[in-house]
Image 1 (cartoon, rainbow, N blue to C red):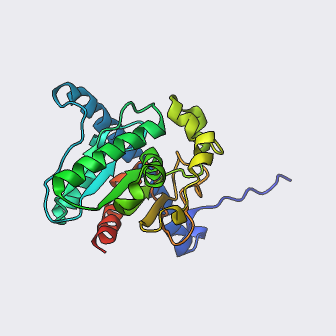
Image 2 (cartoon, rainbow, N blue to C red):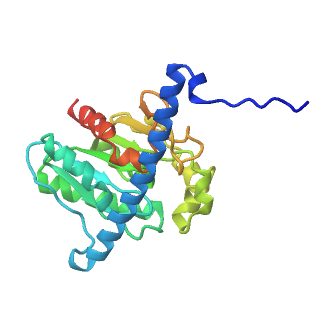
Length: 256
C-alpha cells in the first residue's frame, strides 16, 4: 500500500494561525514593494544630484527641537522623503536630512559628517539639543558620533531604525569598506561597543524589524536598558522606513 499523503491547508489552521499567515505574507509583499520604492527614490536623487549638490538639506527653523534624519547604506536622503512628509503633516517643521558620502566609505567618516551637520543645524536654529532618527548604517554612524565625537551633550533623543549594533552576516556580501565594518565582531564594532550607559543623557528608542532581511541576526538592533527596544513583527529592512506604523511611533516618541 502506498503511504498516505497529508496536506496542510488553511482550513486546518485555527483563526490565529490563519491571521499570522496572512500578516506574514502581507509583510513580505510590503517589503518587496518598499525595496522597489527604496531603489527608485535612491536613483532619482542621484539623477537629480547635478542640479542639487550634495549637502545638508535644511528644513524650516523654529522653536521646535530640530530633528535630523539620517539615511543608511547604500542610499541617500530621498528614501527619507515619505517620513519627512509625515512628520511635517503632524507639525514637525524643523526637520532636516543629510547626504552622507561616499555611501561605501568609512562609518567614522559618516560620523564626522554628522557632527558637522549637527553643529550647523544647532547654530542655524539657535537650539542647544537635537533629536536624531537614523536608518541602518546611519544609526551606527550616529552612535559613533554620540559616543566619541561629543554628540552625547547635544542629542536629546536617538531613534535608530534597523541598526546592526552587533553587525550583520549579510554585510559579508556587500561592497565597500563600511560593509567590512559591519561584519559581526569587526574591529569597528568592537571599538564602538555602543551601550546606553555611554550616553546617559540621551533617550534611546531602538526600532527593529521582525522580517529584516539585511540585519541578521535579528537581535543585532537590541540595546540594553534603559533603552527602549521596539519591534515591528511584520516589517522588513526597507518597509520599516516607509511604514505608517513606524512614522506614528516616531512621532509619539519625538512628542514626549
